[in-house]
Figure 1 (cartoon, rainbow, N blue to C red):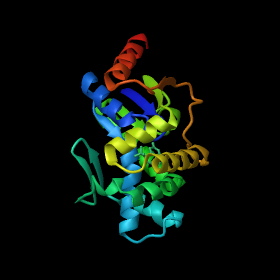
Figure 2: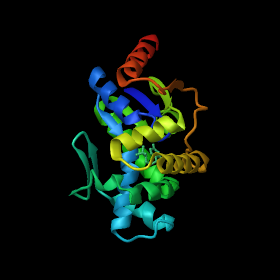
Figure 3: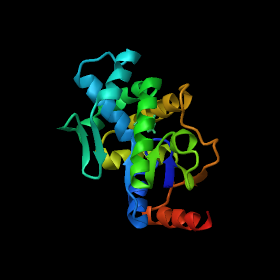
Figure 4: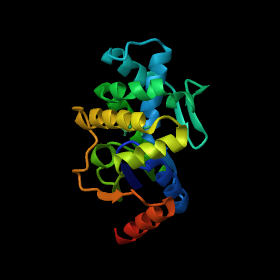
Length: 211
Ligand code: DC
């Protein structure tokens, strides 16, 4: 199984790089953040209290999630844009800190890769917990300002406000008890501040030649 694990904070360029890398390597790409967002969206749509850990974990076990290059469907309903609203973004960290949800998503991610013989998989705990034996583990980062500017370029908004919101989410994601965002599992650190997509991609392809 050939897994390339890409972790890092919000706005570091993980999705863009992971998608491009998957195309170059002829592998499929999985956005695991979209899975946590989709569970959050499903829970909000059903009117669940997101703090009700058991109810949200139960939902994570039964919800039908399709996350692929065409977008995201939740219980058969198109949700590609709906999982990226500010409301879902503000709530997703609570759901992602739920151990029952994480166990379920981890199992689905591992099954996804098994069926395909691997893939380029991006998230927060992919190299540290979900695929500790990945062929290459990357930790992509960039300065907080750069990350906020990238998000604003994609989706609009005020750069100061977005920078603050990103910092708050990263703090929460890095300090939760279950599989927090970390760079202590030996990934190759790639600081993408001031780097273009092609430059980052070339650097990663060089790293792959060395493993
Ligand atoms: O990459 P993103 O911003 O779409 O991720 C949404 C949230 O999901 C993020 O705040 C942290 C969480 N997440 C996680 O806990 N583990 C992953 N493997 C991927 C995302």
